[in-house]
Length: 125
Image (tube, rainbow, N blue to C red; front, side, top):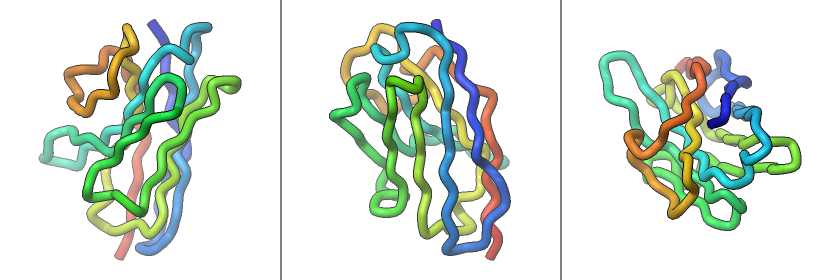
């Protein structure tokens, strides 16, 4: 198991940028695929981006493709989500999640068993 802590959220104007960080504890973090998800009020938690354990494979949701980039630095036990050209509809609580057991990258929240507490991102118009 790993413990995850997100940071970097905040209030930004439309068109702006933020970089979220997901810091993990645990010596085996480099074996976990990690995903970013978000949840807006009244909506279900949705997939944003995922990165494989070794960082070679990534996938992003169509709604953020070309604007958001996921990356990781296993030496620092940290995964990042660079968010550019932010839109008001990106407003949500953003969560990072790690999947025990490695394997292929997954996009469903139910495939992840380690979650952070979330960080709020608010984009004003």
